[in-house]
Length: 225
Figure 1 (cartoon, helix red, strand yellow):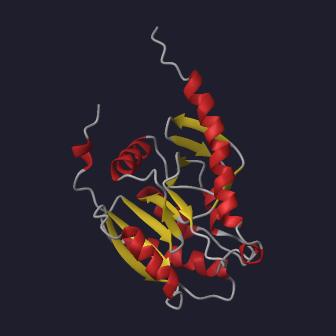
Figure 2 (cartoon, rainbow, N blue to C red):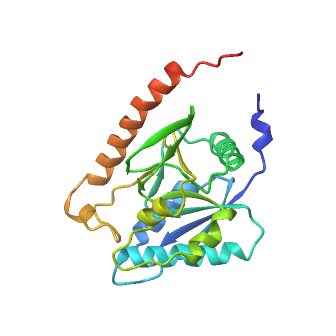
Figure 3 (spheres, rainbow, N blue to C red):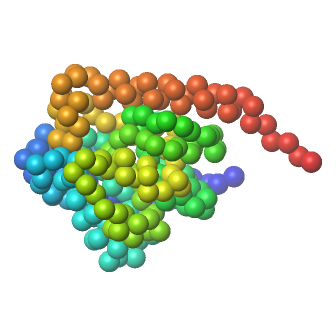
């Protein structure tokens, strides 16, 4: 059994993307990380573009370029609408970051607003094919260059690209991160016209995964031969 103390002292570089004009979001995200010493928080001034999704991708690339010059094996990229759930604890996150790395994962999400197919891998991690939402992503160094090499067109989205770029991705369950619904989005237009849509997507996705994980936990019996 792993002792909680095994993860004491681990600090992960955590890049938060924020438009300087969105002071409400900056205040929100600073509150989220306040007192959480496991995160080395860096606020990144978001790249501006007339297409929000392009600006987000440019911001992600800027972060990866910076991280590539350092020695960290893993980073976290957050958007400023990330919000921790009641299920978050540092031990849970660190344990899963390490175990996912051992399984060759390139991207580990803290919570998603949708997916197509999933396969439970452990009681707390699911493999996913495509997924929606990039508000909390653990990115491993082995994925850095792939991101830097990836072309991005005006009609692309960051979550769409990540879904295509690697099959080695998982999501934590229960979610440790959801998106706070500010009533507007700088990236997803539909979130500006459908009030409460973000909250509904995360709630429904969590319920869908919960049903799948209940089946997994019921029948996942260790058998010795």
